[in-house]
Amino acid sequence: MANRRFNQRNVRKITRSGSSLNVSIPVEFLSQLGWKEKQKVMVKKIRGGVAILDWKP
Image (cartoon, rainbow, N blue to C red; front, side):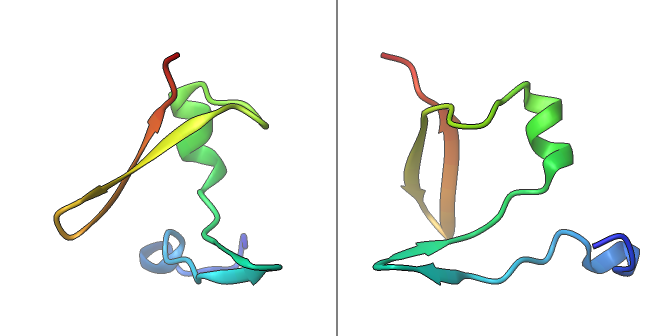
């Protein structure tokens, strides 16, 4: 990924894993948010896309 042009480095593809679809999130975003591997998140549908939020019990 280090060879991607600057304006395309946050462009991601939707991939299939079994019966689920996945989108990878840039590691820079996760480190800025302080999120860790296996952390629970909430996915919410919003107008024009989705929002990924930290899960609060």
